[in-house]
Amino acid sequence: MKEVRVPDIGDFKDVEVIEVLVKPGDAVAKEQSLITLESDKATMEIPSPAAGVVKELKVKVGDTVTAGQQLLVVEAMKMQNEVRSPKSGIVERLLVKEGQAVNAGDALAVIA
View: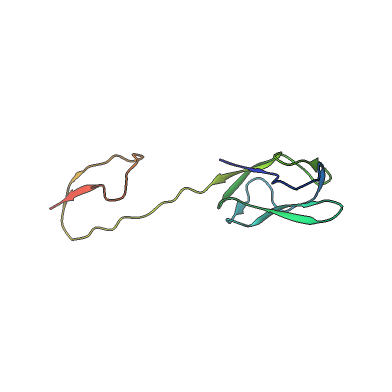
């Protein structure tokens, strides 16, 4: 889970949430705008820190927020990659279990 917080906004103590661009369940891309904040001098869009799904909103339009305050929670997408066999043959033995963490270069199976 990634918490999205109000960044350092300089000398401003309270800024207003003027737009909420997502809702829980929405898929978001990394750097996609999530929320728009406005002070008396500037407007700032808050981007997503990662690709994923919005799990929870902590603010609504009209709220005032301060630096460091949580705005929403994004569940980052988990990467999945298919691993293709380097050769034809018969799988004699799997060397890892489903859900087991592996590192680059680890042997996954024995193919005869």
